[in-house]
Image 1 (cartoon, rainbow, N blue to C red):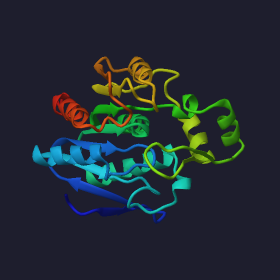
Image 2 (cartoon, helix red, strand yellow; image 1 turned 180 degrees about the horizontal axis):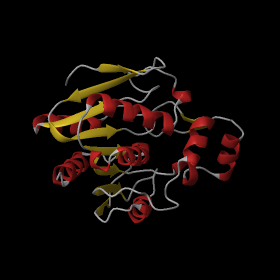
Image 3 (tube, helix red, strand yellow; image 1 turned 30 degrees about the vertical axis):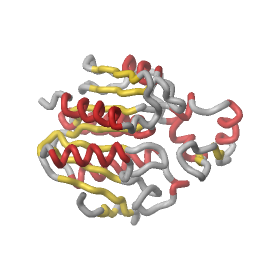
Image 4 (cartoon, rainbow, N blue to C red; image 1 turned 135 degrees about the horizontal axis):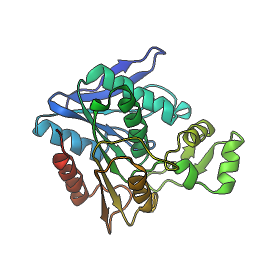
Length: 249
């Protein structure tokens, strides 16, 4: 595993990343909410890319992992722009975006931005329990009211001892970036993996996403006993097969 490097943004944020060079399309992994590039899926993808001569980029959003910044200031728009800055600085040619959970929402926003710049740059998308629009369907009416009033809400975290915060700025930005209400103008091949035992993101979100995408080359794989993380050995193997089989021409 190469050492962590840092990309400096004009406002002083230092975005941590790891990059292995190789053939394209380059793989870019986008982690979930309050996750980072040290996660199992990110590491597995990076290892597969290095072993197979494919370029791969991992990064930590500001306020997460090894990057600088305050998590409370994080928003989808802010993190989208960080991903785009890293892609511009580190990669040339087409990319495949691989997004996990919230990263699946982010991959759509990044993909739309890349496609607007140059449609040839977006070679494919792979979502793992993709969670677009979760600021809408993922909160109760009472929680939305509190967030709209500028409050931070805390929820039990099944993956660690600390509660999971949602800050008002993140929620408001998410509501402004909802995508499932209309056509999503992405035409590249898309593969969506989702566990039907996912307690965090209902699997029908991937079905709704498949219907909303403009692309005619969209496949959804449902894993009947798969949970939200899809990080078991068999789940990782399914992800890597999807990456390997994605058309690259």
